[in-house]
Length: 156
Image 1: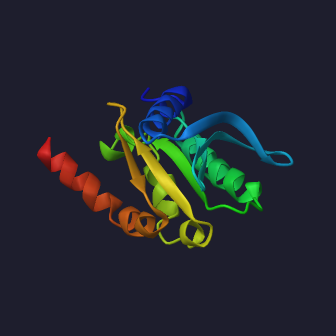
Image 2 (image 1 turned 90 degrees about the vertical axis):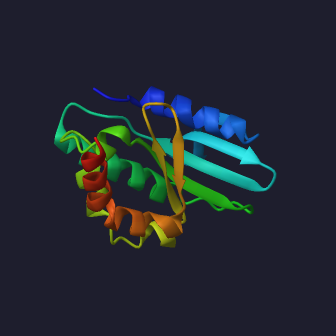
Image 3 (image 1 turned 180 degrees about the vertical axis):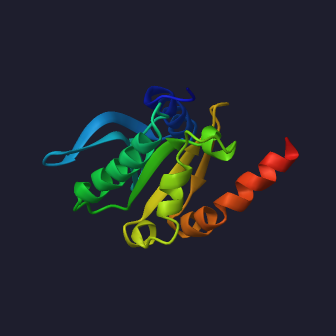
């Protein structure tokens, strides 16, 4: 089935640990709004919500929309820099599988939400590697996603 949410979180936690961040899990950042990981190093803070692979193609859309909604809902009023991110399994999408986040990611390819709210994407692969897409890099990457997937298919 790919990677479940716990596997995605494990890769994220390892990445943040490797970067010397202090981690907290299941953090309520404002009344009623929780994130899966809060990572702090100095003045920098990341708020991460994670999602996993699914057995239903429509669940991918629902989960991605829900993750974005959770980050919007955090509406933090912190005095330090806050980076927000959605962590998601990417191998199924990258390999062009039908059950993947491809449709959800394409839906957001022209959205201003990533830049406006400072939301990054953490793309987690089955080998536990993690690719960070900064808010500035998200839209160009998503607009080029079909070509990227096509190129990978030709290399296989």
